[in-house]
Amino acid sequence: MLPYTCGLDAAADVIGGKWKPRILWALHHGPQRFGELRKEIEGVTEKMLIQQLRDLERRDIVHREVFHQVPPKVEYSLTELGETLNAALAPLDAWGAEHLEELELTRGRRA
Amino acid sequence: MLPYTCGLDAAADVIGGKWKPRILWALHHGPQRFGELRKEIEGVTEKMLIQQLRDLERRDIVHREVFHQVPPKVEYSLTELGETLNAALAPLDAWGAEHLEELELTRGRRA
DNA sequence: CTGGATCCGATTTGATACTG
DNA sequence: CAGTATCAAATCGGATCCAG
Image (tube, rainbow over the protein chains, first blue to last red):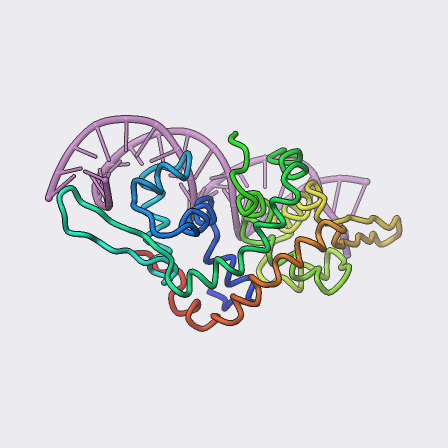
């Protein structure tokens, strides 16, 4: 596998995929339980959520904390690295918000 | 299809995929011909490059200018919207660059 | 040189049912 | 509640050949 060619390349690899931006965004507000994330991120299946969370955990972007209780409780939160990533993502979010309408218009059509 | 839930969501949709960030990055330096892009973006096939360029063109991120010559010449450049996107991408690039080493280390392993 | 068309395999995503 | 397992569908990426 080729090394990353620029920072953008590396960052894209971390946040790539359909759900990771949504997850990061959701965790922006503070630690969240699995079930809370599932409700907040509309349309995601348990499988995908777990898969993506595990991946972000592996990359040290999110922290997973298990509370040994009945019923079970697991909380996900941003690590320090995750916080810096989210900060770097903020301008992109602002850009998307600013151009939301035109982006909706040109969405998903295939020539 | 559900509407975008936040700006980040929308932006991710635009720059998503394996090659789009690389393309944006390459066009950062100014207008480029098709062949130049192909050389600069190591590993990309003609098909993928075309496909992604068309998509970015559709979204009004890149501009495509055809010079009716022999041999043919086509130049790609960033639109104004594309420029603003690239600007919003800059912090993300900086983040990736700053954490390049640790990101390389945790890359691509699947549990 | 630019780029369209087709075929194919790999990867990603999803629906559903099940477990501690 | 949090997570797993399995199977199937959709999408993505790449190789190759073809055309203006």
